[in-house]
Length: 506
Image 1 (cartoon, one colour):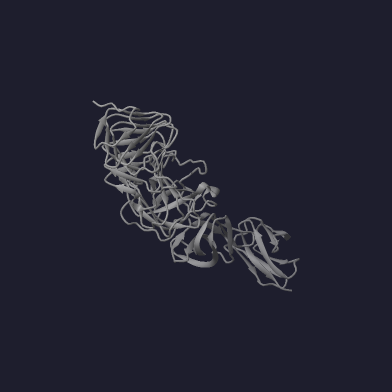
Image 2 (cartoon, one colour):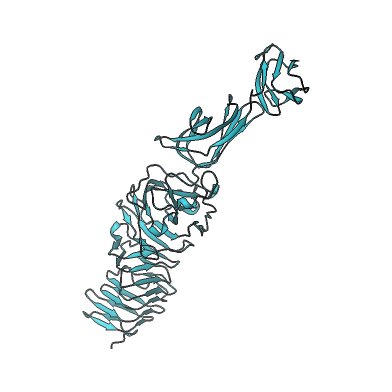
């Protein structure tokens, strides 16, 4: 058998074979039409460099310790890795220019590229083989959607540290750029990005993904992000409604946007099975999940399309965007962080809520119900439109129902899309056992109560919350007349179990 070692300087024959190709301090050239088959490993030692205009077929591992890219940038030929399990490693990153893989798993032990920013003409062809990223990065410097050729092969990320990344340099081509990811079982994980407009040359889209346990652990952790919960809007664990997979996308161009397509395998289904899903991003600054961006759809079961995705380094540190896929009707906490309703000493119900982000938010509607089934609108508060900061809102119900009632918040987007907060019960015993008249009063009131078995302690509170008068209605006294020591204005007459608004007009 032919053993090709560093003595080879020029390969211009039509065909040659060898068990091992070792090159050190020597340039090697494959001329146009040349075909070299290495039935073992390729070892590039210090100073080695290959100019490949032919077809270099390798059955074994590829190791680059040359101190350079291993293959010259002017090379127009292809490298075919056609063995079983093969490694791409060494101390240096190899620019393989045009890489074709077939025949089994190809494992990265070092980063690898096809093409360079200066010569963005690289091609990766996947012919029934799997490129396993293995905590490394593979980059394609070719803005054309044809820079990745899907011949029935795939790319595997699947590392919880999100360091197994596939990068694609975008540019003028605004057609769909599809990356054929698969999971550890070989099941296809749909992913694609379609730019809305041409991007600046060599804008790197970086993608990673991994499957989780049913409770969505381990949570994603990167240098810039740490997901800490999978709560729904009420603060309870929502992992049964969340796909058991995270996606990471990184595109450092906040002024540009495009459409994302993400998917998952049947093994990633939530506890309740497959269904319509919506994608949501983690917001590191607020430790919460962003609202599902509007216009999402499901092109197929277990797929979600997200249009007009704007990539922002200010809202998403490092330009990293961590995505979860949740049931459409059971989302993770969107921009609404908290909604609460409580009775006040002034005889009102104070409704308060906080948003950590808003997108195309038109308004909020406060709703009230006697039975938690049929709700009525009692007030509206304008939204902030689009906001990436924490905002506080409030609305007071000045005429609450006596007894127990229920409050909730309805949020409406500019396109009419609506979502609701949790329902909050409130107990307010206004006027249940006590009558106060006249109201308004010129300064004197009469208090009538139905149950005089115990003493009743009363306070008169002004609009600022200051107590201006207090007294006790003795036990066994059903009716009492009181002179109020108060100027004209609005007051609250409060007792232990309730309160009533009182207007003094002198």
